[in-house]
Length: 164
Length: 168
Image 1 (cartoon, each protein chain N blue to C red):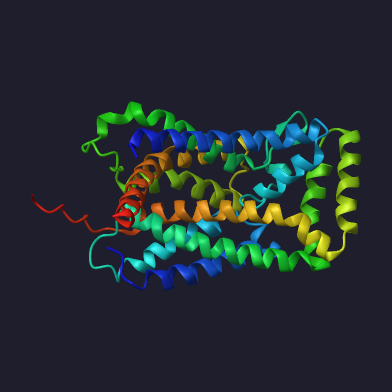
Image 2 (spheres, chains in turn orange, cyan):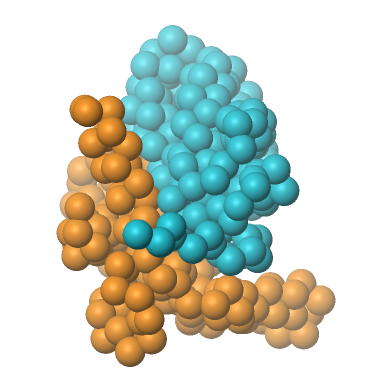
């Protein structure tokens, strides 16, 4: 499997995932309650879904909170930006990832935001939660794609061996 | 190269993730996806010392998938069992009621409350059958997140350089 195919599959998956996040409130507001509730319940496995921490669409909360939405939207943006960041590729096999420093640095704003809110220094807004989440999601894409490329290669090597 | 006992590590991590994810009291109020991602990453962290060479991304993801499979199966079984309990079922339906209460449309709110009330009236077996597709999807999502955790675990915890490919 070529890295491009893995890239396309990952981008398609995250786009569908984002679509489903927006689909839940739209389905409920459209009167398709069971389908909407089904999506809310599925997303409940990955998010607390507190309405007071979620963006609303047409008067209904999205099926994940603002921070989770930021993480997924950031990951989608990171995947879209990935081809533009080829300047930092030293290897051509699509399996290289940046230093772990950038992942930790991208996660630090969330920790600072949560800690400062917990000790009462400030109150977070939907937008600040989404922004810090987006930063982490954006950075994660640069690690997830090389990992998925390596995984798909390893999977196909194993399959080829099992056929021989 | 992963050492032979990675499956044991993945099984333990998967069991913990599955149990924590299925418990509505633990899994729901906190950020939930962290259980699966953290489980995958920590299983990789536990596998690193026994690995003779640096773990690769693919090996990390493999451990994550292993954690995810065990977690998804554990989650599915426990969620089905918990759906038979009235008390735990009420906790699960409570979040749907909260969501319904936050929809700015009185007509939709009423319809949703009716659907939730109907769900409350189901017998335990009917509840388990109704919940099965949801639990299966939640298990699949848990599996995917644990694999992501495995990938990120290699990035975060594997400090050794990957072995150079053999010279031709």
